[in-house]
Length: 189
Ligand code: ADP
Image (tube, rainbow, N blue to C red; front, side, top):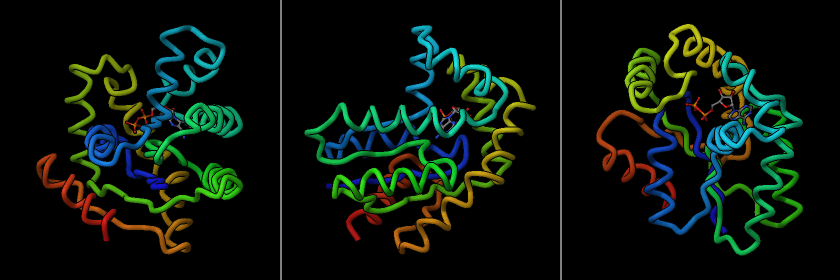
């Protein structure tokens, strides 16, 4: 099984690259952000819980997020592997994911971290707001909050996988194909 944690700050290109990695390796793409947004759209109890956090650029609480992610993994018993996009975003989420996958004897294979500097992230997110319809992309204060939360709570997750010797940093600047080639080289390394 190939279980990839695709990591990086908001706007780094995780969603874009996930589509191509799914095509290349036949993986199941689990984006916690997408799953929350589809729950908000469907007005489910989970969506109602998540919305206020997302609109402010805060993280949805770990217990809610972890439970949701595990139930999504359980829906795909025949998967060849997963791309985890937007998860884990805290050290507690990483510890839960490791325990959950270890119990299934399908541990995380690698963490690939897309690296993009802050001004470029802000530029991309504001540009994305033109078409994404995402309220969290349209407001510079919410974007700043998401970047601050990333630095404080999410960035340490890289260290968690570095300790397991599973971390690879990937230059996230360039064309989509160039970045995809870097990701594939790291996967097939
Ligand atoms: P981006 O990577 O562009 O910030 P996402 O679509 O991954 O966007 O996430 C959007 C929002 O969904 C986050 O700002 C957060 O509120 C919520 N979210 C997504 N994944 C998680 C997670 N693993 N833990 C907590 N909240 C999450």
